[in-house]
Image: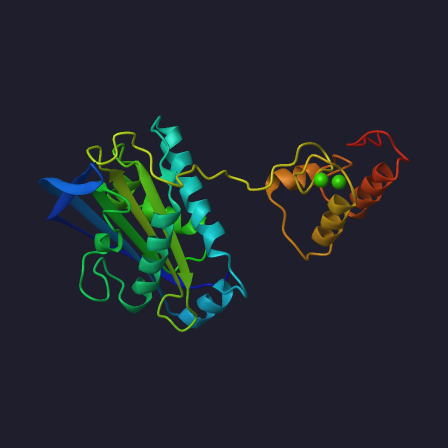
Amino acid sequence: MKNFNIFNLFRKDSEETTATANTYNNIGGDFMKTTNRLFTKVISALSAVVLATAGIGSSSMKSDASYDDPDFTELAEQVIVLVNEARAAEGLDPIYAVPYLCDAAETRAEECVENFSHSRTNGDSFIQIVDYNVTPWATAAENIACGMSTPEDTFEQWKNSPSHWAAIMNPDYTHMGVGVTYDPDSVYGWYWEQLFIKVDPYEVPSGEIEGQYIPDKYKIVPQSAGDIDGDGIIDSFDYVLLCQYINKQITLNPLQMESADILADGVITYSDAAYLRKYILGEIEQIPVSLF
Ligand SMILES: [Ca+2]
Ligand SMILES: [Ca+2]
């Protein structure tokens, strides 16, 4: 990273709104409107703004932050992993990721490029991105941030703001989505959005939303030393990955790095690749290998 000054400006605001929800019972094949309840829904919305200024300027920050093909979905999941790690450390239940809410959050992140605000570009409140009939919610919150290129740095922005942190650590929230986008022509480059909800217990007594899941910290989990692709078999596919890593063509997660260190000396070199190859060819019987 080049040198530049960063000022964090946080703005917090909250609002209350009311919404009418209709419930339907399917009786004799006809949908019959049975109740028309008025919910009071508390919405909190918090934004984190990072301004990059001076010296080399914001354009250099953006060029540092750019990727040819950033995997926004992967970055969003990493944010959810960070949320759940922080909650676990305080003994709180994890929050489920929901693909529908992640899609909604992605749209909100894109809207924040145009208008960094908790209002949508058409003036609606952020929560109107969520169709109540798809995901019935009782309470909701939004955190937005911009300017940082990694999940960790963005999470740190929120962590340093008590009001944002309160949403992340709110024991009531059950489900969330995260959206990420990058626009090299925008003011801050990177935009991040967290959308928290508490599922409406009247509509969803089970508390379960279709597609909900807890993201794993690492998508690929090696089963043993040498199983770098995590399929439980040590073969030439693992060898190819190791060579690609050494040639700086790919990155490996920390578990894969541990698996790739065939000589167990703390660094990954061509020697590790050579011994993995020997093992695959049956020339040695066991890995990891200790040469000493
Ligand atoms: Ca393998
Ligand atoms: Ca090694």
